[in-house]
Structure formats: C-alpha cells, structure tokens
Image (tube, rainbow, N blue to C red; front, side):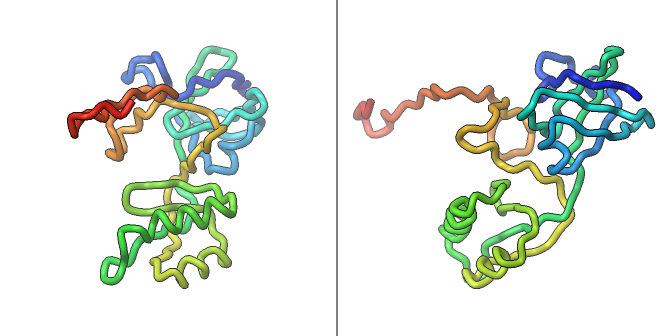
Length: 183
C-alpha cells in the first residue's frame, strides 16, 4: 500500500508534461470531498490517502505519495442531474432563478455556461420541472462550486467558460466605458 499525504491544487508550479506522465486516480465527488480514503490508481497501486481535514480534491489536482510518485486526480463521471432552460419557451432568467432556488436549499451545485448540475434529488428535480426547466439524469464529472467560504483555486480549467487566471479577492475592474469614474 502506498501512502499519499501531499496535495498540490491544480498541479500548480509543475510542468504540464510532468503532470501528464503521472498515474491517475478517478474519484467521484463524494470521495474527493473526504480527507481520508483508499483507492487504486491507473498503475494498479493501492493508495491510502491521508490529507489534512477539510481538503477537497478537484479534477486536475495532484497527489504526492511518500515515495515521491505523483498521482493526478480525475473527476470521475457519476450520476448527476443536468438542468437546462427550455429552448422553445425558456427565458434568460430561468437558469439563474433555478440556481437561486437550489442555493437556497444549500445544494452542492456546479454552474456551467449552459446548464446546472447537482447530485440526484427527485424532489428538487420535480420542483425544477414545475418551473418549466429540462432536467435530465446523465453520467458526467461533477465539480460543484466551492462557495463563498470554500477553498480557492486558480481558474485554469481550460473549460472555455472564462479565460484562465489566478483567483484573488481584489479584482480591479475599470468602469470608465461611459466616461465617468464610478470608483
């Protein structure tokens, strides 16, 4: 058994070629939100993972074993509900409204440009269908939002939702497009 006790979020600071050569471990959201678990990597090794309490793993993170070997975390496909606006009758506010109602219920939620994803809940699925949204059960990786008090990470996902940049709490934005300074 190989003991793993180090976590490098988003494999920061490592060359992409080095990260791509690492063995992988495919984990669902439930396992990635635990700090202690057993798993098997793509090289067939049995891993005993012991991370600091509260550690949450994301797809693309890197684990380092006591022997120095690296294991890249892959967000495994799992059953999730995808929520989409109805293309025929939907409004631009349908998905934000759904996100509001799900957030009000403290649901772990992944927000994508064209849909929302959350773990299956038939009561919530019915509520969303009554709001005239399309709810479909699919197999997909699940990466819920960290929330206001969750861990921070770099937005270097390459998912097309936004340009990659390092997250910080002091985003400076210019509001001078109308010729007035709104600072």
